[in-house]
Length: 267
Image (tube, rainbow, N blue to C red; front, side, top):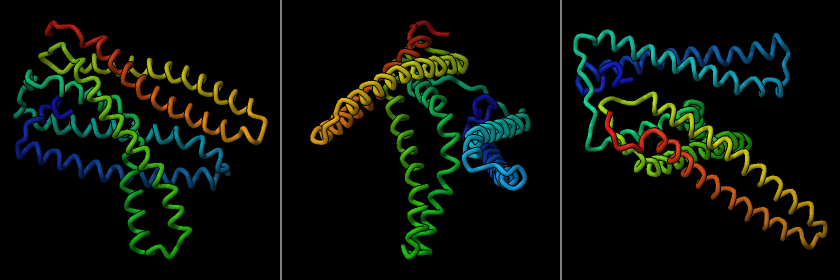
């Protein structure tokens, strides 16, 4: 968006524009969060929904709110870009490190859905954990266990996204052979779309295989003495499953990038 709205140069004016965007977006985000919490209170008090019913609605509403926040952020960038119209500078594509640039854009777009859902939750989780640690000093064990139960999955997901980002970035970097004079955003989106399609199909297949094999192992071990063997085999199968998932992610993201960026001609 900075490049699209000609806010990419590091000038005092552009830095101030980004600062204003950050402040306005933070205020809007706070009001959206308040409305989001009030919506759940409304569901519980006036519609008498159970926890299981709300848990079904929650992911859908989370995605909807994330999309709304993203559209508002895009609108703020476009507004600042229109104000900055008189000082727009054309973007010059860096030829020396275009592979790094395209790999970073592809990886960011690929990981964006996960980051949109998770990253807004991370600061509140960490601040809540630190507040409980400092304020209660481990006196309230139940509260600490509750916060750990909330924080640990979030941190685990955060590190998973970070590791996936690094793996994808370095695996697709060498695939960006084709050179461009502008940012090929449509081709990047197409490559990300194909990567998701490949990975969804691949994960469906390996999950079916994992389920069938693990179910066969467990069901065949009727004797109590053979139970440890079954557990070890399922654990080994889980390790193989994780390795296969990582290999599939690398292989299919590279395949999707090569589909549009492996040609040598420049555009």
